[in-house]
Length: 263
Image: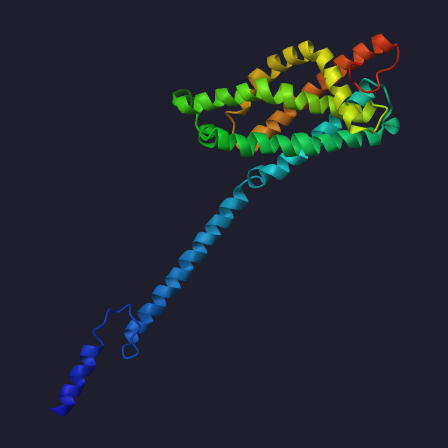
């Protein structure tokens, strides 16, 4: 009777759930190990799926800042070289690489760095529907009232605040760094703003005609494509500014254009 009672207590002690760890029940141990193994496998599968998903994305999607930084720097350098060759009529062997380095810095720091911070980081905070709106189809965009309003605000901010009060002064100041006769930053800003003021009507008119429609397209695109798209258009915009300013300078001074800016 004592042996039967002892056996009964043993059986009752092993009636815990199979998933629990019971040293007296090998079946519970096996199931616990199996559950742990399945959990590990599921975690590994999720990590593998995430890695495959990330690998399937383009470099622009995985590294949007680095991608557009490279595009901005290359574009600005190429635009300056084109102006030197076409407007200044220099041979490739005579290209002023010191001058080109200034444009590289401008493209890298302002167009690549500051403009990305403004139009991606800050615009995403100021206009919270931007990322969602950019992923919608055209028909869905037209039905998204909040997204359309934010897109219109971004266009207005770029055309009426960013370009006239930030971009153009920086652009002309950078040109003064290249073409000016002083290394005083105050002179760069003062002389650059003076030239901008002289050209403001023509510059702002051309800016509104181009960047108004371009912004409508840009701010409806996914972010990792919107900035490279802007840089592509900006290449031709920079060329336009350089060509027009170079022609006027050659006419006024009777000399070959050497900086692409109206004096």
